[in-house]
Image 1 (cartoon, rainbow, N blue to C red):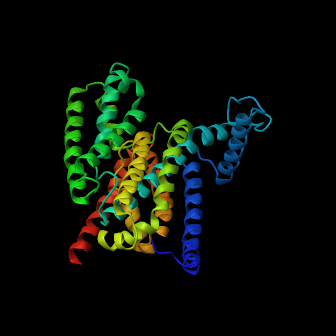
Image 2: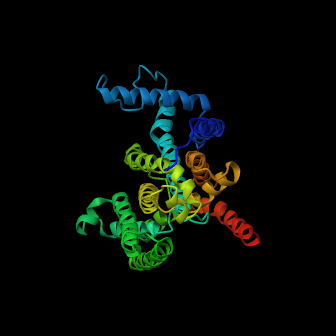
Image 3: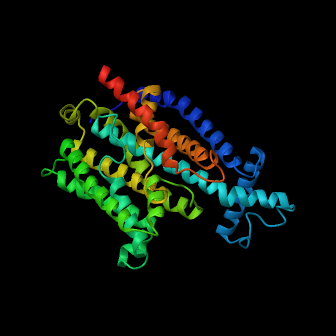
Amino acid sequence: MSVVPVSARRVGVRRLGGPLAGSVAALALVLVVAASSGSVPVGAGEVVAASARGVEAALRDLVGSAPQPDAVAPDAVAPDARQRVVDTIVWQIRLPRVTLAALVGAALALAGAGFQGVFRNPLADPYLLGAASGAGFAAALAMLAGGGLGLLGGLGVPAAAFLGAGLTVAVVVLLARRGWSLPVVPMVLAGVVVGSCLAAGTSFLLLAAREQAASILTWLLGSLAFASWERVGSMLPPLLLAAIVLLAAARALDVLQLGEPAAAQLGVHVEGLKLSVVAAATLATAAAVSVAGVIGFVGLVVPHAVRLALGPDHRRLLPIAALWGAGFMVLADLVARTVIAPAELPVGVVTALVGAPFFLVLLRRRSAA
C-alpha cells in the first residue's frame, strides 16, 4: 500500500481541525439548548451546573467515596428546593435523552457514511441490507412474547432488536458471498429480499397483535421516550468499536472510490475492506435501532450533506458526519417532544419530514447530472 507523506497528513489534519472544532462547538450548544427546553424552563447555566454536579456525584458513587444520593446531588450540594428539582430534571430526565439522541444520530450517520463509501453510492443508507426489518421483526416478537418465547422473549426488546439486525445482515452477507468475494449487487439484492420477507412478517405480527400493536408501531416509528443512562451505557461500547473500525478504514474507502480493480492495484484488500466496513456499520446501526427503534433518513441525509459541504474525503467525512448526525438527531428529538406538547411525536416522523424532501432533491440532481 502506498505511503502518505508526512506533509500531506499534516495538511489533512489542519483541514480537519477547523470544521471539527466548529462542529463540536455547535453540538455542545445544541445539547445545552435541548436540555434546557421542556415543560419546565431551565436556564443554560443551570443545565451546565446540574450536569457538573451529576458527573461529580456519579464519579463519587463509582469510586465508592460517597453513598448513592436519592437525587443527583446530596442536600449539602443542593440546599434549596429549586436546585434539587433542576438537578433531577436535567440529570435524570433530559440529559439521558439528549445524550442518547446524540449517540443514535452519530451511529446512524457513521453507518450511512460507511455504507455509502463501500457501495460507492450516496443513496445508500444504514438499512440497505435489511437491518431495520430484522430489528423490527425481532422487537415485535419480543414484545408479543414477553417472557414466553424462550430466549428471545427473555432478552427484552433492545437486545432482541440488536440481535435481529445483526443476524439479518449476517444472513444477507452469507447469501451474497461468491467464494471469498462479496459482490455489491448481489448483496444489495439479498438485502432487499430478506428485508422484504421480514417486513412482511412484522406486518403479520402487527395484525395478530392486539394490546401490543400500538407499542410495536411506536417502536417501528422510532422514539427516545424511554431513554436512560443504562441505555446510554449499553450503546457506547458497540458505537465506539464501530467508529474505530470505520475511521481506520477511512483512507482505504477513499481509494475504493476509484473502483475495486484500481483499489486492489493500489494495495487495498478490497474484500476485507468491504466485510469490515459492512460489519462495523451494521454494528453501529444495530446499536442505534436497539435503543431507539427505526429512525429513517439520518444515515442518508447527514453524510451526503457533509459531503456536499466538505468534500468526499472520508478522513473528514466520517468524524464530521458523526457530529452532524448527533446534532441533527438532538434537534429532531427536541421538535418531537415539544411541538405538540404534552403529547409527543415519534422522532422518526420528524426525521422523515426533513429527509424525504432532501432525498427527492438529491434524486433530481442525480437525474439532471
